Image (cartoon, rainbow, N blue to C red; front, side, top):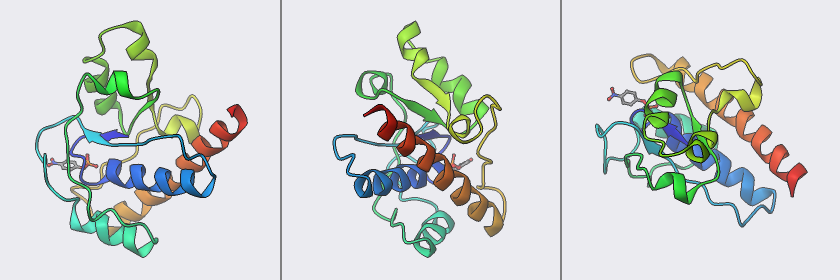
Length: 151
Ligand code: 4NP
Protein backbone atom coordinates (compact mmCIF):
# COMPACT_ATOMS: atom_id res chain seq x y z
CA UNK A 1 0.00 0.00 0.00
CA UNK A 2 1.60 3.25 -1.10
CA UNK A 3 0.68 6.90 -0.57
CA UNK A 4 2.69 10.13 -0.39
CA UNK A 5 3.59 10.44 3.29
CA UNK A 6 2.93 6.95 4.71
CA UNK A 7 1.26 8.59 7.68
CA UNK A 8 -2.43 8.83 6.67
CA UNK A 9 -3.81 6.58 3.93
CA UNK A 10 -1.36 3.72 3.39
CA UNK A 11 -0.73 2.71 7.04
CA UNK A 12 -4.49 2.48 7.42
CA UNK A 13 -4.88 0.45 4.22
CA UNK A 14 -2.10 -1.84 5.43
CA UNK A 15 -3.72 -2.55 8.79
CA UNK A 16 -7.26 -2.89 7.42
CA UNK A 17 -6.03 -5.44 4.89
CA UNK A 18 -3.95 -7.26 7.53
CA UNK A 19 -7.00 -7.62 9.79
CA UNK A 20 -9.17 -8.86 6.93
CA UNK A 21 -6.49 -11.35 5.86
CA UNK A 22 -6.30 -12.69 9.40
CA UNK A 23 -10.04 -13.14 9.74
CA UNK A 24 -10.19 -14.81 6.29
CA UNK A 25 -7.41 -17.30 7.20
CA UNK A 26 -5.23 -15.94 4.38
CA UNK A 27 -2.28 -16.10 6.73
CA UNK A 28 0.52 -16.56 4.16
CA UNK A 29 -0.11 -13.15 2.60
CA UNK A 30 2.13 -10.38 3.88
CA UNK A 31 1.24 -6.72 3.63
CA UNK A 32 3.23 -3.55 4.17
CA UNK A 33 3.02 0.15 3.34
CA UNK A 34 5.32 2.95 2.26
CA UNK A 35 5.31 6.56 1.11
CA UNK A 36 6.75 7.91 -2.12
CA UNK A 37 8.19 10.90 -0.25
CA UNK A 38 10.82 11.06 2.46
CA UNK A 39 8.82 13.62 4.46
CA UNK A 40 7.79 11.39 7.34
CA UNK A 41 10.33 8.57 7.50
CA UNK A 42 10.43 7.08 11.01
CA UNK A 43 7.35 8.99 12.18
CA UNK A 44 4.18 7.58 13.68
CA UNK A 45 0.97 8.10 11.69
CA UNK A 46 -0.91 11.39 11.69
CA UNK A 47 -2.92 11.66 14.94
CA UNK A 48 -6.16 12.22 13.01
CA UNK A 49 -5.63 8.98 11.08
CA UNK A 50 -4.76 7.06 14.26
CA UNK A 51 -7.88 8.40 16.00
CA UNK A 52 -10.18 7.63 13.08
CA UNK A 53 -8.73 4.13 12.81
CA UNK A 54 -9.21 3.58 16.56
CA UNK A 55 -12.88 4.58 16.23
CA UNK A 56 -13.20 1.71 13.74
CA UNK A 57 -11.31 -0.79 15.93
CA UNK A 58 -8.07 -0.56 13.94
CA UNK A 59 -4.75 0.19 15.68
CA UNK A 60 -2.10 1.88 13.51
CA UNK A 61 -0.35 3.66 16.38
CA UNK A 62 2.84 1.58 16.25
CA UNK A 63 3.46 2.05 12.53
CA UNK A 64 6.61 3.95 11.51
CA UNK A 65 6.78 5.76 8.19
CA UNK A 66 9.13 4.48 5.51
CA UNK A 67 9.86 5.38 1.91
CA UNK A 68 9.05 3.17 -1.07
CA UNK A 69 12.17 1.45 -2.47
CA UNK A 70 12.89 -0.32 -5.72
CA UNK A 71 13.34 -3.62 -3.90
CA UNK A 72 9.66 -3.45 -2.88
CA UNK A 73 9.04 -4.61 -6.45
CA UNK A 74 10.93 -7.81 -5.56
CA UNK A 75 9.17 -8.34 -2.24
CA UNK A 76 5.53 -7.87 -3.29
CA UNK A 77 3.21 -9.23 -5.99
CA UNK A 78 0.82 -6.26 -5.88
CA UNK A 79 1.62 -2.61 -5.28
CA UNK A 80 -1.54 -0.64 -4.60
CA UNK A 81 -1.18 3.12 -4.88
CA UNK A 82 -3.67 5.61 -3.45
CA UNK A 83 -3.66 8.28 -6.16
CA UNK A 84 -2.50 9.17 -9.63
CA UNK A 85 0.54 11.05 -8.39
CA UNK A 86 1.67 8.02 -6.34
CA UNK A 87 1.12 5.97 -9.50
CA UNK A 88 3.42 8.20 -11.55
CA UNK A 89 6.09 8.20 -8.81
CA UNK A 90 6.08 4.43 -8.32
CA UNK A 91 5.99 3.68 -12.06
CA UNK A 92 9.01 5.96 -12.51
CA UNK A 93 10.97 3.58 -10.25
CA UNK A 94 9.96 0.42 -12.10
CA UNK A 95 12.92 -1.41 -13.64
CA UNK A 96 10.98 -3.67 -15.99
CA UNK A 97 7.58 -4.37 -17.50
CA UNK A 98 7.11 -7.00 -14.78
CA UNK A 99 7.59 -4.32 -12.10
CA UNK A 100 5.09 -2.02 -13.86
CA UNK A 101 2.51 -4.79 -14.10
CA UNK A 102 2.41 -5.00 -10.28
CA UNK A 103 1.29 -1.39 -9.82
CA UNK A 104 -2.36 -0.38 -9.69
CA UNK A 105 -4.69 2.18 -8.17
CA UNK A 106 -6.30 0.67 -5.07
CA UNK A 107 -9.72 2.04 -5.96
CA UNK A 108 -9.73 0.07 -9.19
CA UNK A 109 -10.37 -2.95 -6.94
CA UNK A 110 -13.62 -1.30 -5.82
CA UNK A 111 -14.56 0.50 -9.04
CA UNK A 112 -12.76 -1.39 -11.84
CA UNK A 113 -11.47 0.70 -14.70
CA UNK A 114 -12.50 4.05 -13.19
CA UNK A 115 -8.94 5.09 -12.23
CA UNK A 116 -10.17 6.96 -9.15
CA UNK A 117 -7.89 8.22 -6.37
CA UNK A 118 -8.27 7.86 -2.60
CA UNK A 119 -8.42 11.58 -1.72
CA UNK A 120 -5.49 12.91 0.30
CA UNK A 121 -6.98 13.81 3.73
CA UNK A 122 -3.86 15.58 5.06
CA UNK A 123 -4.90 19.19 4.40
CA UNK A 124 -8.63 18.69 5.12
CA UNK A 125 -10.94 17.99 8.05
CA UNK A 126 -12.11 14.93 9.97
CA UNK A 127 -14.72 14.03 7.35
CA UNK A 128 -11.90 13.39 4.89
CA UNK A 129 -10.47 10.70 7.17
CA UNK A 130 -13.89 9.08 7.51
CA UNK A 131 -14.30 8.92 3.73
CA UNK A 132 -10.78 7.49 3.39
CA UNK A 133 -11.59 4.75 5.93
CA UNK A 134 -14.74 3.76 4.06
CA UNK A 135 -12.99 3.62 0.67
CA UNK A 136 -10.05 1.63 2.05
CA UNK A 137 -12.29 -0.78 3.93
CA UNK A 138 -14.44 -1.50 0.86
CA UNK A 139 -11.41 -1.84 -1.43
CA UNK A 140 -9.68 -4.25 0.96
CA UNK A 141 -12.82 -6.40 1.08
CA UNK A 142 -12.61 -6.62 -2.74
CA UNK A 143 -8.95 -7.71 -2.50
CA UNK A 144 -9.88 -10.43 0.02
CA UNK A 145 -12.69 -11.69 -2.21
CA UNK A 146 -10.31 -11.80 -5.16
CA UNK A 147 -7.66 -13.69 -3.20
CA UNK A 148 -10.23 -16.15 -1.87
CA UNK A 149 -11.50 -16.80 -5.40
CA UNK A 150 -7.96 -17.36 -6.66
CA UNK A 151 -6.81 -19.58 -3.77
P1 4NP B 1 -0.65 10.41 3.11
O1 4NP B 1 -1.01 11.92 3.49
O2 4NP B 1 0.05 10.47 1.76
O3 4NP B 1 -1.98 9.74 3.03
O4 4NP B 1 0.23 9.87 4.21
C1 4NP B 1 -0.07 12.95 3.46
C2 4NP B 1 0.85 13.05 4.48
C3 4NP B 1 1.76 14.09 4.49
C4 4NP B 1 1.74 15.03 3.47
C5 4NP B 1 0.82 14.93 2.45
C6 4NP B 1 -0.08 13.89 2.45
N1 4NP B 1 2.67 16.11 3.51
O5 4NP B 1 2.60 16.97 2.61
O6 4NP B 1 3.52 16.16 4.42
